Length: 150
Image (cartoon, rainbow, N blue to C red; front, side, top):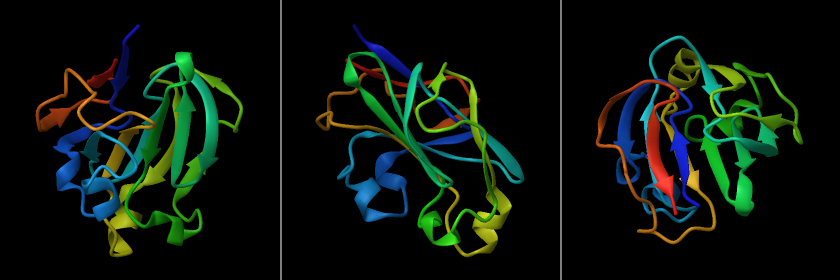
């Protein structure tokens, strides 16, 4: 059964190759897409129904049915911000539904720190090329489909 992965934040959809970090750009973590969020405080939503497997101020993983994991990483090198500008809204182990707020972050604070605020959305443990229905680059609203996992 296929799984539609939705945009966790509004903004501009980008190809993973356009993420300013080689680990994401080369799909080393896994394939997916990214979203450049707007200015200000942004709510990051669960991209799929599932359980919050991992939760950090700068990233989270939702484990969906069939053991499929989706990583949402808020900004590049934001682990170095030690949670500054990030607010958790759920706990590790919580069940979430697609579109449910997981955390809030200040995209302006990320950019002011000299980091990119781009949000990679990665399908974990999936081969490159396995995703279908990849959204074309351009404007995207939070909750709109980004790609489909087989």
